[in-house]
Length: 358
Image (cartoon, rainbow, N blue to C red; front, side, top):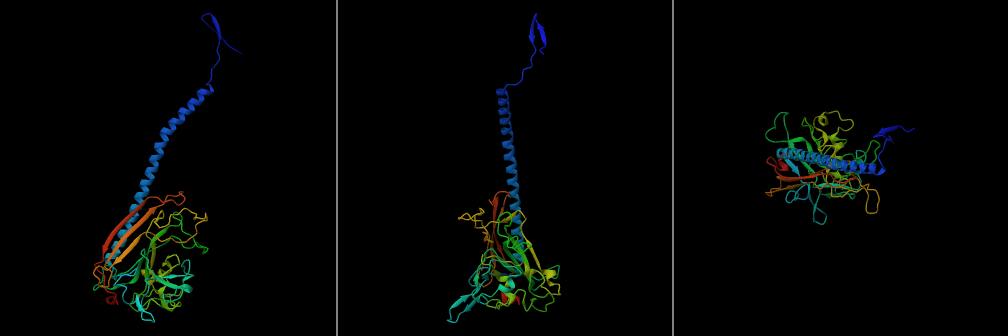
């Protein structure tokens, strides 16, 4: 029913008028435009804040790694070579002569013909470099040293080597899962990280070398190369086919051992937070050139620790650290986040010749 209103003596209909379709569309367009103007800068702001925090995190992690390594190096009484370095490796145990009298070099590390090293594969697989299934290699992303012995409060004088080897080395965060299956490299889910391992090798009561079964837990004598596959003393020098060490099991007490040396000195810790990894030389995209999923377990990192004998006396007295880390952004399908490269030269004031340590 229409209601009539009398205006100026005339009757008109009082009908409520609504918005036309054109007016609704115009209003929606204006509203959308305003949302774009407001939300785009806001989203950019959040993104920049996230990237800024990611860069700050990786900067802090890199600095902490370098500080820890520098602190250990400046106290070290001996640093093992990680490559052929003349004249350091021009003598025992790195130098030998074959049956023809030709000069040959051992090590410093042993590459094995197995895809990865685990507590179950190592006992049956690790052989000396003289073995037919192993070869001597360098590893510039690894650093092994002996720190000075202490009385729990201060460093003993004269300087003596500690009862454990300190090793910085690159490895996947997780090598195998709880079912024993290999966990392949992924820059976010399973990155390459830097570990610091303390490998006990000598009994703290001075009674002699620590044993794992019938062999040394870690042999640092001049007999550590060229040993048989049944001798476990060279395990700490071993790498997989892809160049990945795994020292974790050497830091843990072997079955049946009743002493407290592993409890006192053995440790194995990651130097990096969970969202930070080492930059590798591989541009990960999840699939190879044949569009097949990437399943390779390990890719060597770009970080390097270059050892030098600056005065040619046969002792490493300088290490050039070049630590390159990245913060990978979750959900980015493996693309790299912010990267930080922090080089530093460290002098080693306390190093001694190997003969003076024992």
